[in-house]
Length: 50
Image 1 (cartoon, rainbow, N blue to C red):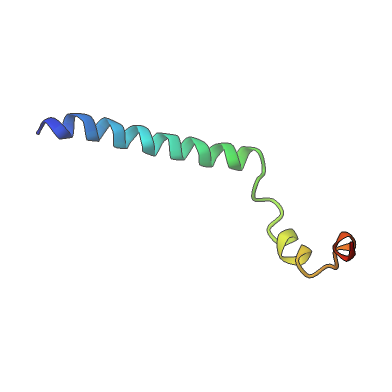
Image 2: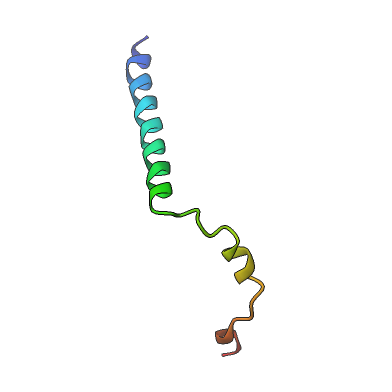
């Protein structure tokens, strides 16, 4: 029973931190360019010939 006193608030705090991190990533538009990374891998890198 004593473990629940520690684990329940810790779980709620970790869930809130995860939610805040997700909301921050949405606010800073981290998910706007979903096709960019997939297309960039197909392009030739000019610096790779060095």
